[in-house]
Image (cartoon, rainbow, N blue to C red; front, top):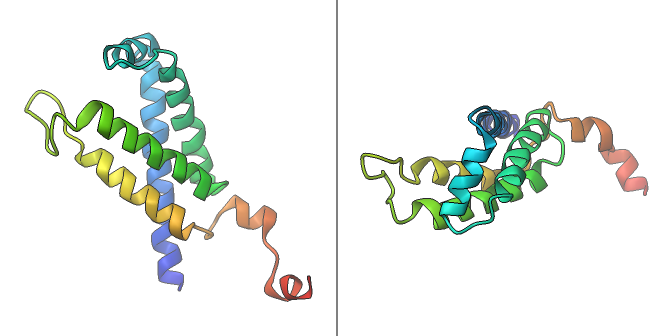
Amino acid sequence: MIKNEIGALILRVTLGALFFIHGVVKFQGGIENTAGWFESLGLPGVMAYGVALLEIIGGILLIVGLATRLVAALFALLMIGATLKAKLAIGLLGNGQMAGYELDLAFLVIAVYLVINGSKLFSLSKLLFHRDSANAKAL
């Protein structure tokens, strides 16, 4: 059981850190450029702001272990959308000029794992909302 929690912790913190970095890079590289790229895909440019903020805030939430399943579900939906809208036509490994959807697929699988299993080890959610089994049975 503890091995599963250690594995989930590693996945949660890693996924959170990677999404956080991706969100920060969107702003550092000029969020307007990302908005323009969204528009070139037929998406509203304003979505770039929402995606970048989700990546930053959601990344932090995953790192600290708060709302893990909800954030992971949002990240899974984000990866499905990114794959279908931007990467599917490029292929799994890309075309030499642009990366494929292999990383998006890995992020999706990790997010789905966290949606299904959660991650309680060193999580703020457990610290704030945990009831020990004796109290839970009494209720």
